[in-house]
Image 1 (cartoon, one colour):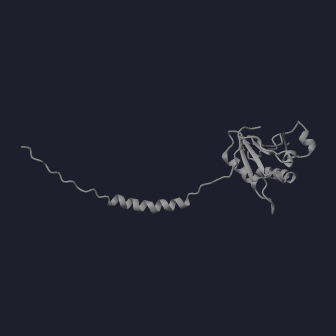
Image 2 (cartoon, rainbow, N blue to C red; image 1 turned 45 degrees about the vertical axis):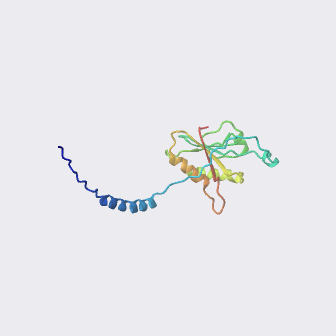
Image 3 (cartoon, rainbow, N blue to C red; image 1 turned 60 degrees about the vertical axis):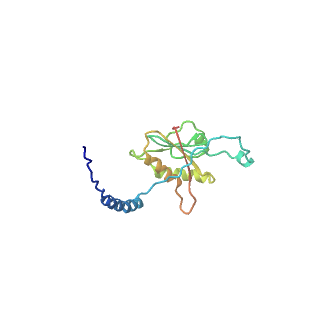
Length: 176
């Protein structure tokens, strides 16, 4: 006759595991307080998906500025209404129509992008077009993220006691 062997089961002691979990919960809550998430407000280009809207006569008369900052390894090229702004940010009508322009508009200085000069150029454009609020940024694929963020920061800055330069930033693909 086979004898049934009775096995005794020991209860699993889960107290050490519970202690670890109770120590981890406050630590995770405290560390979450120090983690910051950066959010940059950027507008995506709009696509036409429906019927064309009726425009008011004022909007038909006023051509959009389409201010574009093209970022290359040589510097920043500013473009408005399809016309590239020459080096030094000369906005005179004679210079805007001259096809022989020195580009980029704002050259790099000692391998560093000149954000101060870019901001000065954007200030000139804002004085000529005070109602404009949008700027389009296009960059070569090799341009570093910090450069794009620098452009966003300098294009949004407020002048002394005045409104923002171009608070509405749109990112676009390609380089002109």
